[in-house]
Length: 324
Image (cartoon, rainbow, N blue to C red):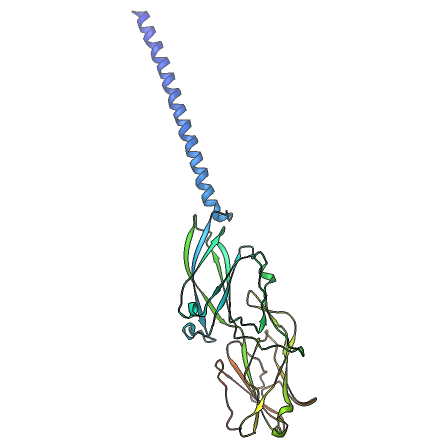
């Protein structure tokens, strides 16, 4: 009887060791499986953080145009057609796309597929109609190497720029953990100014001899962040007398605005002879500073002592000094 009990005890011990081995083995398999699953999940979540190429963003973008007061003017069509540029998180160009004037005016959402990153910048320039230098950009170029520069005419003076609009949108969706689809808006507004010059006291008999030289612009270029950079440049503008031959008037002309602290000086010439120089408003002592998105009207009276008056009006709204 003692032998039978001993044999039964030995059998139970062997069975328990075998069962323990099986449980341990199965637990190891489950642990290994769990670790593998966790690593796979981490690899997917890391695609956003490390810009893994399998992570993509679909952006449904609407372009909104505003005036200098912030009023929505998209439906007016003034923004024209646009060029859209996409830069990655390292500010390298990865995509560019034309957008029609109709799509902007009708507020059509533009679909962009951004591959390999969820952090990027979108730059929009509109009305790039050839009056400034905006070279075709190759993918891979740095944002710091992209510019919209004034052209020069044969005399070396600035060509009046187009009615440019600009906007930039910076996207950073690093909190996402998979491909995502986003809707957003980008606001564009004018980057040029209008100047209108009217002069009293000139001889209408010499109408073809008069012209204006405008100095004071210190930068001739916009970068793709919308900031003025570059070199000084001058403008030369012609004009004509009104029907009563009392005022010599430049057609309203566009120009880049001035950087902070700068102002214009207007030189009135008759052939090679300098007639007058205007740079200060006699009414309040202010300088002539064209502002993007509005019209700066400058009236210069040379009949006796030089008098200058400056009135700022809405875009392309020409002010007339009938009392003069």
